[in-house]
Length: 128
Image (cartoon, rainbow, N blue to C red; front, side):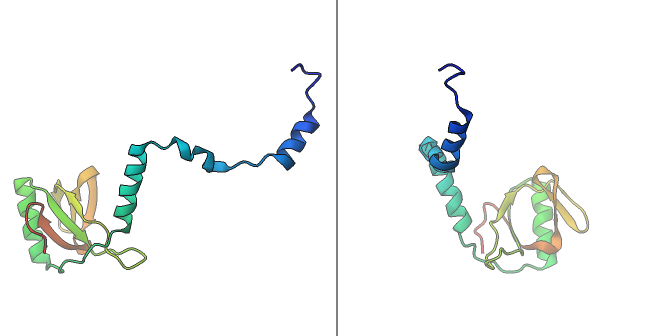
């Protein structure tokens, strides 16, 4: 095709009236099985309901957290926060990297206020 056969008005008319872009639908065939498996697993985690464990006292929380910090053992932390459907968020399994009077430090230098923690247990213990 040379430049003399090219008509800009014809192209413009085609895209305005004839062409229908299917958007992301055209990419659906490019998902690999491991991608769909990961998406399904993520969807299951998002739809999971986490049972609230008993609220521990501040003394209980600090005792377990201090022991976990000293022994460098993994703990499972359940926060008091809930989502928009009033379901508890997934537990956090982590090492305790430090603490102060009001917060603990977990992975990625993230501070978690003690008053936001509902329950904490060693990872290898049976959760209550």
